[in-house]
Length: 434
Image 1 (cartoon, rainbow, N blue to C red):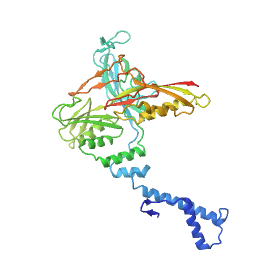
Image 2 (image 1 turned 45 degrees about the vertical axis):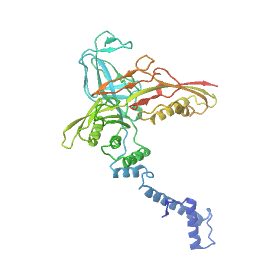
Image 3 (image 1 turned 30 degrees about the horizontal axis):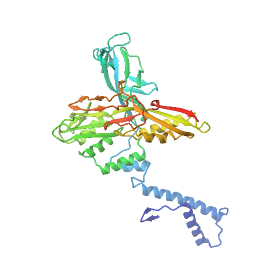
Image 4 (image 1 turned 45 degrees about the horizontal axis):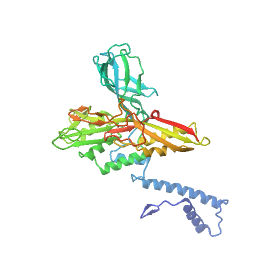
């Protein structure tokens, strides 16, 4: 075994061949011909290949004991020893807004979809209330009606994607189709983007999580609570506002309360993980209510919030060489690489204008690039808009970007509890040939 003070020092195959040649000479004399075209040389070559395979196995066995060096099933075994299991692919979650005739019942399991055939199923029954009103873009209260002037009611319900993966994190206002005939149904949409859809955890992601659990063990501290929630399947990011004072904090959270913001994960799993580590008599704040069970099986309500998604619109103007730019696949490559950058963003991360140039130049033949980006709000007012909903006594201030609806050459900032999100449909590529 090539064990040294520096660990397992695996020899190269050339070194193994030299050692085997030396053994042949030792046992058969200096006159033996070890050229590759001679039988002894061929045999020495085969033995060196066998030795190299054995060394690979030895190195793998040695590395299997270390988080940073092991991979695949070996890494799974290390995680299992610590009670941590690789996260599987997860579904995305979304809140659907449904307009329908008053008192219409939308059953659990009703399917709605995007124009790209991404299907979402409701997780509860929804009974539409009485006829209601809405505030139009001019600030005037209007009755909610269908195209024929009949009154409509409005309700919201949670839905989960039929398929797993990050492709199911669709943008706001894209779930607009009903997959089945529903009496009284008028329209559906998602005011916020879907979130929580993810692919199976990679080795690198799994390693980081194992190390984070060692660095910040699960306990009732803020870091320990974050660790517990990050271990929930489907959870991609967590932010915690812990108000330990006797007065409301800067966000309006009441005294002695904890306000958790989560991206992804099942609400029930999140509630249970949070309850299991919270100090006794801790007040949880948020608009999402889920139930946990204590050791006696008693139901305990837990409150938290989902991160708000901020849709980002991007326009890329490209000057390209007509002889080298791939007109069939170049634009899609650029879009995919921009999407890859957005996959690295966490809650509160700004969209950095400068980071979009590398994806824009990733296709062959691109000579010059101009990029603009921005957000779009539901209103047509270019000035800054502040929305302050009240949730369980906590006032959450959400400020939309002052360049809403306008594309500019600047970074896009989001709040600590927002997630910047885009899609291939929000990325416009304009190519001119030079």
